[in-house]
Length: 66
Image (cartoon, rainbow, N blue to C red; front, side, top):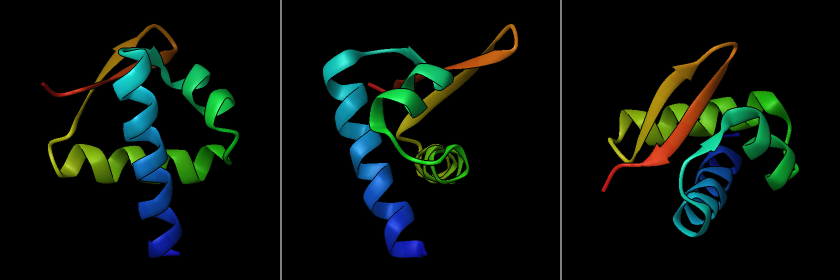
């Protein structure tokens, strides 16, 4: 499972690198991965200091830390 989380974290990083800040709900639809897996991967990226996550109403905005 840890390998899959890492792979999806890489997909998320590349997606954010090309698209910039996005809503988490849009990110999940775009990468076509289960929401739970995307949550774990964004958490991993956040823990490592690679992304910024901000609440936006009932959703979250995710962007790369530059």
